[in-house]
Image (cartoon, rainbow, N blue to C red; front, side):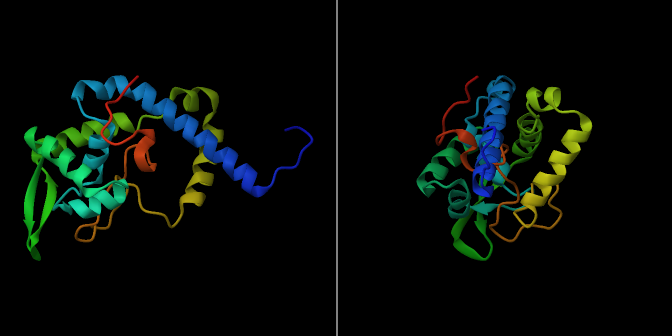
Length: 183
């Protein structure tokens, strides 16, 4: 748009469009590394949302994942059958079941998050270290006061509050509920 002055809203929309494009490229590139684990994008997200210790109620997971609790229940069933999560009674309310990571689930989540957080090559190839530093500072400023990212969150989550975010950093990660990862 040479010669045209863009509004702050238009510029912000262009920034978001670029972030979404980079995220889609990251998901595409990392899919080959995630695929051998035979998990859907939503299942990876669910694992990422569980606190490292304790558990989270299915209703809270459904809220964070922006889907119906019956979808989360189905995902939990499949993850539980694979030995990645367990259901536990909530000590404060016997009617509530908490979903918690098993040691196997904890170990796999660590591997999955490492893979899922790899930056797209375009980001590394097209920006030098100084530009990346500036971008990091600007995005950090834009994200100030928002939910903490999982690895850096130091405070213990509240009971039932997921400790981590979806590996893509955006709701849904660009994939419909329970869809297989595709390259």
